[in-house]
Length: 242
Image 1 (cartoon, rainbow, N blue to C red):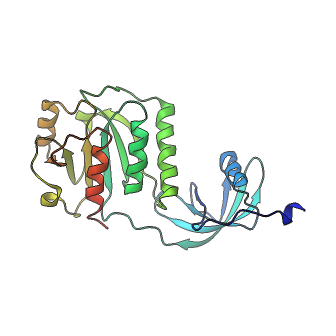
Image 2 (image 1 turned 180 degrees about the vertical axis):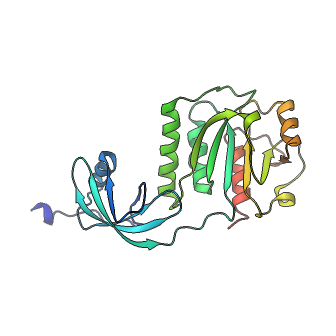
Image 3 (image 1 turned 60 degrees about the vertical axis):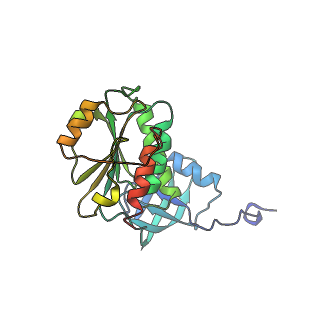
């Protein structure tokens, strides 16, 4: 049996999606992407989809595939999955271990436009290395592919909480609040979600945020873990913006 006659796996229900820098008539892919296509046993003439991470998506055809790269020919544009009415930012304190990866993956699936990492008073982690930041960005890219989003969130380098500025409304998950999202959320302006580290925010940090216009909201009667709170709050927010 020749290579052309060898059975190939059944095509997936959803087309393969590849993140590219721009939707140009001819798209060049590097070694990593080419190897991925080879693992999936794609050959010239096969179809896939490409997205630029900024909201645009299109059909494409694989025209060349080698060990060191691949060439795609752009096809017709595709209607991308709808995003929230206004961009949503997740501002989150640095967390220990792989918790940030888990939060990044879920937040991407939930539709955030960007993730701003923050240095806070009670955070156990005080910095993040270059490689870990790059890994978070790869996690966001893979989550965009999996969730069929045409947008890949920005993962921004950590900054001190006191220097963080936002536009629109900032919601701070705070155990002592009785206010609910339903009382304050509208989609007239961008939305920011702010959650703290394992040790929570200090009282001065909360006071300063309130003075700057942050809205404190409850996530219910229970104390949620630092990696659970942002997902709970984001889920409640994006569910109102579909």
